[in-house]
Image 1 (cartoon, rainbow, N blue to C red):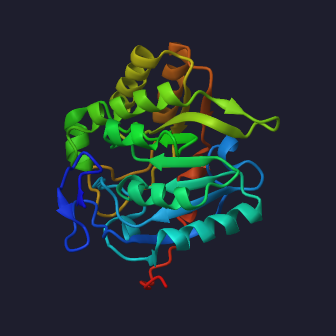
Image 2 (cartoon, rainbow, N blue to C red):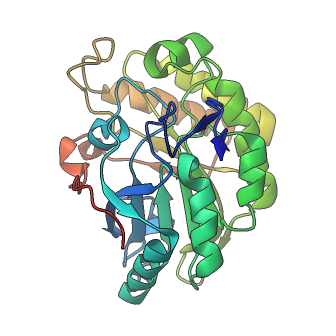
Length: 289
């Protein structure tokens, strides 16, 4: 298969060469475990069953997960291996199966879920840098979408994530997600279906956040669910973002969301901006049996 799963459209055979995502065709996974730090309707009390994939279609200079996003390393899994791990997570009682950074392995996720579909929701946890047609192919497999909406400023997207076309790609993908998955919750407030649009507020760039909120308001109205994140942690090799987010910057963005009329908004505590929340990764490369 020549891979064109993401907007990079590398058109490479990943069994013999690496594309922009730096991931081979075989699934490389760095962590499979319950995770308790997603939004409350996702993590709940029993955790979200997260599966972190190696590689990434983006190139964010401020990425907290560079150790796994920029190097093709991890434990190799076949679809059969992964469906067994999903069964284990399900038995632990997690609220959902959460595929993190799944874009470049969306074809393998479908193969896995064709082998076994758990009785809990499937979460597609993405940067938002997606092709609409690929997202539409995932609708039959995914119950909950957790897309980032990082930028409406094309120049900022180019400078910080090296993806100038991010705004239009993310917007079209999120439009498809919202049209396919209305929000539904169980009796305990755990999400069974739906979309939560995430936005990480960056230091110095409140204007970009305001543009993102204005665009969501214009395109989708105020009934969507938002998660405004304050967890930015400075990285030594991202010179432009050389400090933590100021409380006043975050408050300005939250206030703008309130002024626009958004009511279903998740707000983070300042303590979320810490490297302590970066998971432990499994870097061992193993051949799946």
